[in-house]
Length: 464
Image 1 (cartoon, one colour):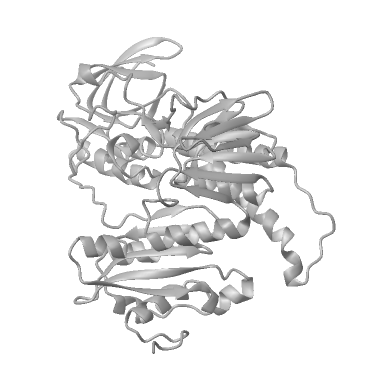
Image 2 (cartoon, helix red, strand yellow):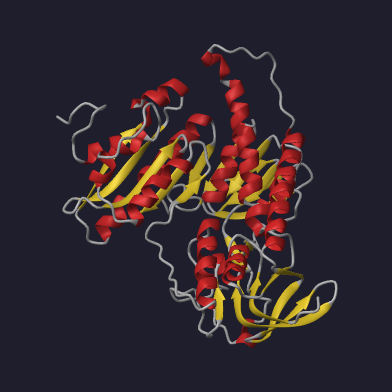
């Protein structure tokens, strides 16, 4: 590399970093994108994409097992998990190859190596060779890693993190998952669908405790029906690996045994080794970097995006933050807002939310109500035998503005987009009821939920 100075330097080529680099290049700036690992970060390589690829395979397997309900017979069906993993790896490589093409097409200089600050505008890059580069503006997008707890340290064989478990090519007979949040619950659904005996241990009073209580309750009910063992309000004391498995001991003394243990108790920020002090950038002591609505840190010209700069550990939030940061770094004003962030959990059934829950709306002083509609009352759901779950819309009684939405059930990950648009544009429930929704589709669930909010349901009996 001959060029040593750039208008914009982005540290980290994950779902926040590479969009930031592309946006800056589109504006006409010279851009360096620094990456120590693989392009795409956690999401593409050991997170969103590989896990959803395996989940897609598990869903097909479940369809095969249940095809007799549609009058279809399949004798002695089997699956090869090693081949499922091989397909997962190929999908990741294909997407990563496309990303490499985008970087080249946008004339972004890709710098391979680990970046540390030497000053607010200078970085040392440790790669195949050590070099120094400078930038007028720098965007930090270093992401996070699985959080390790001393009482149950990862060994890569019996006690695994989310990266380890995606790499294994042979299914265990049994699996205990410590942590009933998003990551833990997604893996619980995946491995249960493939026949693994799964137990989930969660220290909080309910699964996915950050979601609305109705959503948590629906997932827990579905898990028990599927045969997933759920233990909430349980504090794990320690996990010990042996030759044949793992023993997990609770504070109360109860012991669980399984072939493998997955630890899914959060993420640690990748900011401790990048020399923030040399740049004068302040963090909160836990690696999180405070920013303003421009995604700018306490140091002018240095921005932070993604997991390290937000309570939203979501790839799509990081991407939008990247666009905002890059625009501001290039002198084009933009601001970040979080009023209409869709959040998706790829469990079975799927879960998606956006905006406020009923509880949050009431806590914020709204005179709020909720309109809920079950999938089982939709013709399309009955036709496809996907009747589990519901959708609900939280509204302001006075203004009829849509404040939030939650959905548990088929295609929730796609359906939530309609509510993100509605909430982001401060639409009212009438905007939904007056929009013609195609029939028969599961998207009708929003129209029906909106009608329930007005107590004028079409496909539910009236309240007595």
